[in-house]
Length: 197
Image (cartoon, rainbow, N blue to C red; front, side, top):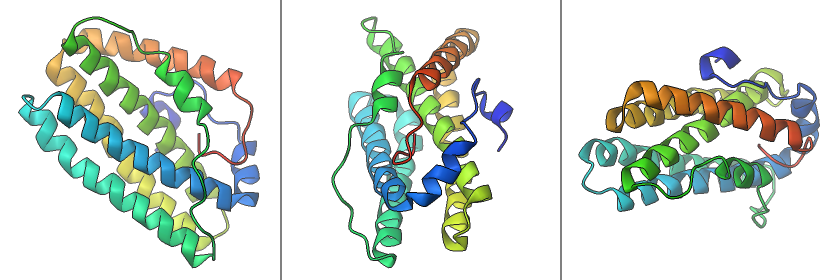
């Protein structure tokens, strides 16, 4: 899953994966909470837009998939003799949430939220690709390959839903704005060895 396929403007600093591997317990803990938040985000969209049948039908299995990922990450921690640990502040998520436009109609807010979710999935996919290709733990490498494929599918799904419920040309324009904004966020953030994002 190459960077240009995902549309990301700024690739992850290649040093991240080497630092992350030395702190894999912290990465797994952070990853577990990322999966929990991904499931919760899909549930929120379903609850907020129950009349949008395609959204409900397509996001319901994503909720299950993300929760299965959460459970699997817990397993990976336990296999290594580690517990889940407490959730930490996620600066990346906080900052990319700031890219969304406030106000507007209910439908406009839907598009903002779908694109925000697509952005987070794209960056997660890129990070999973690095972990798959670079870490020496074969079991985790295989695991992150599966997740990379899964997150790529979710990223595409969120974009397709945005285009389902709004003019595709306008969605593409807004998506490019999100990507440019995310690149600026990435430049501002310190390289964290204990975070997935």
